[in-house]
Image (cartoon, rainbow, N blue to C red; front, side, top):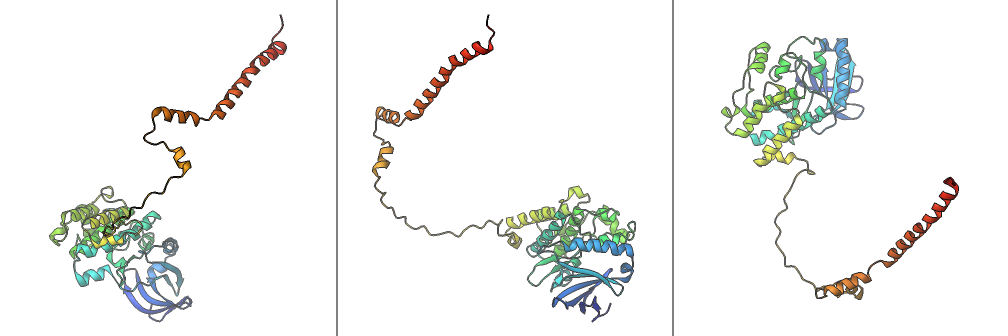
Length: 368
């Protein structure tokens, strides 16, 4: 696909934004709505596969239903000129992979807010029943205002439908970041996304991924069997508590990790709050606890109490009143009308007893 191409007589491609193993991304203009969008155009070998087309449409519909500040919005998808394409929100800025290449390792106080935002977006998708399958820094976009957005939901899962038994760099995610169960050819789960996000977190704070190999097969073996070097050896700013969190996320067994991205996000926010990290600023205002600034104490003005009214005095019992007088007032306040009505009702019922006995013996009981 070349620049200036027009897809479906609506989307004018302007300039390439990036190229990956499965697609090209272009900045484009939506001629109908007069706005800039990002267009992901898939390779022709994927676009020509009818099974993939059906799965791609299914995954695109599911991704389009995700509406979250930390997820790139999917506007549209289609097929034109032999290409499948996906229309997405255009996010100006960069991605985490470029940030790592340009800045090297980040201080935990700078990295935590980004990871917490990724947890928020992925956690929302997990609650909706969707697994990303290909969490990597390339798919974590960072806008100039430091807002992070997760992109490319479901594309790796759609590609896996072509050859489910094939293990390549596009079948259940990227080898550098996929989980041990993905490396073993198993279907990913929310815990798999958590592991991949742990690899991203490790790389973001150390400047290098936990495992490096020359082939996808060797990389898969390392994810399944090898233990990562403690990240504090590469970045002394990572303290023991944060290192324990990272290593837990990189556990080989899904049950040993945090189950969802939401759970990991809460752990990181609690850690950030304990060390007063900027990550705590990502807490929603409704759930944040803000202590008010100290206020100077002002002298209180004591005003005289209003004079009691006669009715108030009549219903109050002064301290100096004797118990006998108090008992007398209680007797006077007693509800005699209710007592008399109760006695009258009891007498009426009691008087009916002989009458009903007469009726019984007169009409019911057999006479001798």
